[in-house]
Image (cartoon, rainbow, N blue to C red):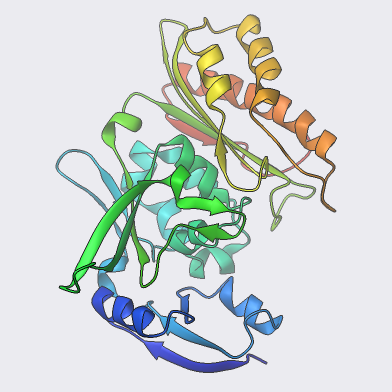
Amino acid sequence: MYDIEKITVVKTVQEAVQALTADPSAVIIAGGSDVLIKIRAGKLAGCRLISIREIPELHGITMEKDGTICIRPLTVFSEVAENTIVREHIPVLAYAVDQVGGPQIRNIGTIGGNISNGVTSADSASTLCALNAEVEITGPAKDGSGLAVRRVPILQYYVKAGKVCLGPGEICTGIRIYKKDYEGYCGYYFKYGKRNAMEIATLGCSVVAKIKNNTLEDIRLAFGVAGPVPMRCTHTEEAVRGMKIGETLYKKLAEEITNDVNPRDSWRASRDFRIQLARTMPVRSLQALVRNAAEGKKGGSNAKVGLI
């Protein structure tokens, strides 16, 4: 049974912002794969819902004239995974979202909901961090004249575990990835779990790198479940950037990673085990990325979770 006091269906972003402003305690629902579970568990019992699912401008993926890829938040995982723009330019994201749950979840779960629930294990989040994505946020203008749009780097979108930086009346209206952050780069997503399907990540690792003349010209390394929120390993990135591809680089990568990650103990895995994973997964990801780059592939994944 679902204990819902009231549900309001809105058809425009302005209606959504107005409804949230009028009732700040209301909960946004889109695909419902997270919200309905919480309601059924009693965590949101008696809540008021605002359904944004029927807002047409919040669906779809486009490329702007300057090469910016804009993913609207109500685009479901299966649509992201199959989209021609994503598969051609940022295939690592297609692979990452294809690791979410099973087919049913991927057909109803939205990428906007995946990043906005503030969960560190979200499969799309680490890859979006590695791609330097920006989150577009729309809310009420301070002078009351209408709507105001602001953009924040996705790393600043996460405030703490389970909380993002949406203010009163604000909703996520887009995810933007700029051409400079994907052109010439290859990517690889590695998800570790205890089984091969429908598994929440014990640790998720996404590597986006630019390799030229056998040199690691640039690297962006991001983790999920290595801390309370998805995170970038900026210290490690700086330490290995510019190194020649080879065993010295891989050893340095494994050594430096512990300066960035801060995993916790949980019933899924101990902190020590997650640290071991954090030392191993980026190395294997970068090795696979190097192989893909040599073959002219832009992105890839371990295709399934499992033992490493």
